[in-house]
Image 1: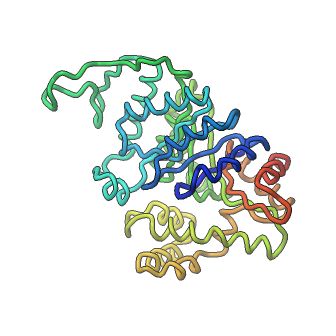
Image 2: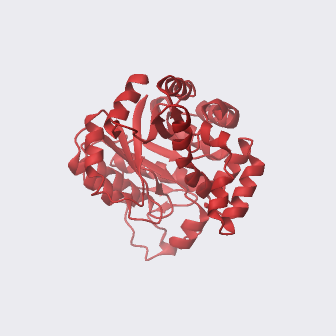
Length: 347
């Protein structure tokens, strides 16, 4: 497995620049930059492309609603150029609270829009004239919807690659099926290796049955907070994941429109998921964090002695994970680069 990490959207890219360079030297394979209603990930990846040499870079994720398909394609080609072919395009639908609240765009047809965005990006990278008659995007714009002066154009520049890897962040059944059919990679969250086949197996199978062999095998990026620690120390570190679990399961969406809450329910934590959401949405964030089951934290993190961590890495690999995404927590005389070296050895 390759080893990757994601930089938080609330962090300062300049302050963690040295961390990224040091992790690159230790063998980090890919670094992802998140985007919510924060600084955009594109400018930060441009910065990282300039200060790194070998580590791959990617968006996790660009919402398909906040940019036109053509702009997404142009941006990906530009980042791939300045990074000399190291860029990965991670896209996703985000959620209605962010898309309608922050961007003012209707949250409609996430699957159909994602599919058409991918089509248009790949057309652009091949330097084909962008002529597309989709259900959600039509290029050029029909004359009855504008001035009638739209022209079919192709990208002026010659991209470094016409097959920039496209990853889709998806956890819904139909969305995962579409991802397995047309994307290069899949980005699930709160991944429990032992439950992956039960939850997503049928969707992955259905999507792969329609997959173009030219795309190659579907890559999967999944992981969690990682610490090599003994006994009670491992349990203590695991608690750091409580706030994120409560935020996503409880606060990332309204009642009936929270995809992460639905996933926790599918995993078998329905009662806890309901409680977490009720507490979080009523402003009781500390109580919501406390309601996250210890078993859920244990199964969605990798915290323990080397032997335990090695077993967990094997479980991720057995579940089809090709890119282990880590949130490294170094302890004692460990550093993030050292922890990455240890993980690569254990994997």
